Image 1 (cartoon, rainbow, N blue to C red):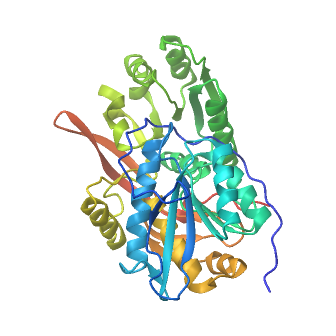
Image 2 (image 1 turned 90 degrees about the horizontal axis):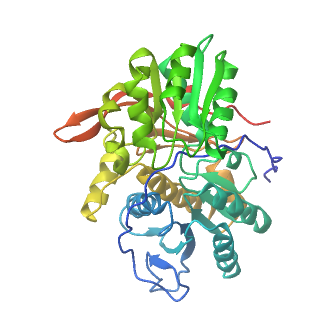
Length: 404
């Protein structure tokens, strides 16, 4: 009999934001108001019901689309194109949370009430935390999607994640310099997003010996020259930029014009394809940490994922692997656990497998997903900017510290 772990709270920080895209039409709608894929059983074999709650609409719909397409590709891959596990059809229904935690909780309760034992999805950290509560209360398996909030790791026995978390982003930023003794400036907006990133840098790079300070800018600022001067005067070894919103272009232009990008190493997160052109002429001077871009990994599994997504007429993006990995994890849980949720949990804890990004491991102690990350540059390709891999960072080198 498995021994339950105690809850292990972790540092909660915000994920990097990106622009939304129009979400293409998905599968047909079933009677519950969710999209459905997989087949109902044509025999007496009972299907395995899986409910995916994600952002088909809302501010992060672009992330939701990438997750959805990745999940479809991953389910096809993990079941060898059958949509079945051990002869049982995997009946997946998709439900749009619209980025609303209350709506997502209502959907989860409805699915659990109908007998669903497996839930997955969401790109929104606030939604993921609420769904994790439902998983623990009802003892169902929950595998979150791209939501990067660190508090999800170790939150309870029934919650896993299929993507990276914010602390892995920050640890990857630290691979651009030797953090021990380095002067690190966090340049961010003075809001919850920026303050959360500052806290993460202090927790990760500060623990590695870096001296961390910050330049926090009012959200309504439109002139960035004085803030750029503060960075130059600090003479840092590394500037970690955490920025979102309509002023991004003006901010990068300001840092470039005041010589910040030429005077030190400036690192930020590379988002989805739609954001590649946001840096203007500064693009070639910025170093990027990256969770994923199409072609980054060069693995056989990634090639299968890309081919499947392209066959569906779509383009892989930042969070396509998160959906693919979620499907791999769900299929493995069903293969090993059947209808026993605790057995599913046991099967996932410590499981190491080949995902699209390479060797991926579910850490048994707190369910962190240890995976490779990337250092990336943007290079000019005609009038566009495209990512180019600098180096792959081994998952063990940027794994979050174990909670507890």
